[in-house]
Image 1: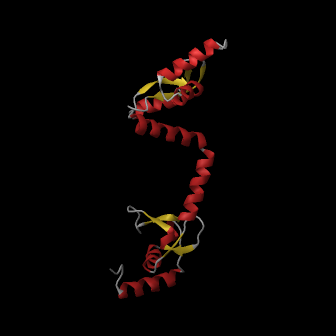
Image 2 (image 1 turned 90 degrees about the vertical axis):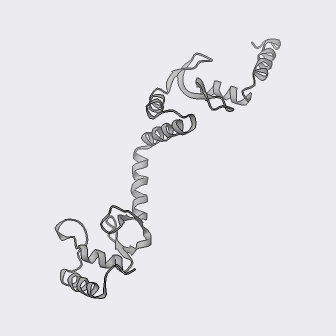
Image 3 (image 1 turned 135 degrees about the vertical axis):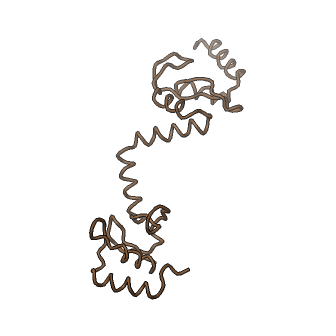
Length: 176
C-alpha cells in the first residue's frame, strides 16, 4: 500500500526543497518533509539528528507519523542514563511487581512491604532488613524474616525434622 500518490510525492518533494527540509520541533517543523522521509523508509532522530532507516525506530501508534521521535540507540542510552540515576527507585519498583506476581499481593500491600523492609525477624528477633518467607509448596506467605533465618529454612528444605536434628546436634555437642 502506497502512503502517498505519485502526484502527492512530487508536491511534497517540491515543498521540501523550497523550505530546505527543516527538521525538528516548533514553527520550523516540516511535517511534509518528514512524511516524505518516512515514505522513503527513513527518519531523523530527535536526539542525535542523524537520518536513519525506519527499522532503527520503534513504532508508536499515537504518533502522527507512526514512529517514536528518537532512534533505538538514543532511547536505550537515555533509558540507561535514567536507570543509573534512579537505581533504588527501579529496584523498589521491580520488588513491588515481584511481590504482586509471586505472592498475589495487591499493589498497596506490595508497596507497604517494600516501604517497610526494615523490621524484626520473627525467628531471631533482630531488627534488620527483612525478606518475605513463603511456603514453597503453596506459595503462601508465612512471615517476615532476616535473610539468615530465611536461608536456614531454605537449606533445610522447610523440613521440620532436619531443623530438629540440627537443634539436637547443637545440644549434644555443647554448642547450644
